[in-house]
Length: 236
Image (cartoon, rainbow, N blue to C red):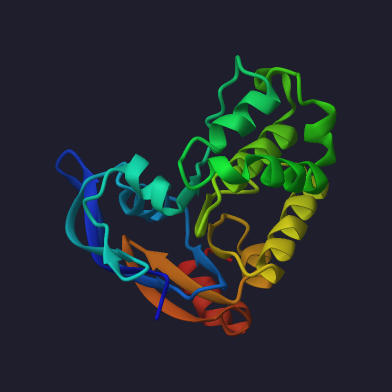
């Protein structure tokens, strides 16, 4: 059974509909990519799944429970964690304080020290800058901190919105190496990513979103080899 299942999800902003019955499944322990051209609704889908945007129709099921209309903080408490686009850090707080905030839920607090050691090992620069204000970090370091904060929340499923956006190529490679490591550890993940080739290279399974609908799905290496899919839906 899928750990997270999204069925016929529709939503939007005001009277403007963005999602039109999108559906996808996250298999436990797998890394799933959601790709598509800019403006097709990828971020809206993540925000609707997390409850930050009210769903109009459809269902979100997490670990067998209907969580469609559960509040975002309650979803986080159950293990649904989003690393949002734009990082959204507490810029006036230190790196350590941001990480500590990631472990605010009851499920995460008992594991704070263990997870702190884990993310420091994964991102040594964050350990070096533990006392530094998050707002003074470079763009790459901020993205590392956003990912690390997500891991501090003891996620059952971790969702990333535009992981590589605005980063130098060597930092993108570093972050995707972290994704590979987390995948090997069996963490269930959903990656929304503008770098289609990288997303398909690191993921197990992929969905293509177009005009607010999931129009295609398949094993990532099959989607990556299909030139007609790339031209029709991915702008490649």
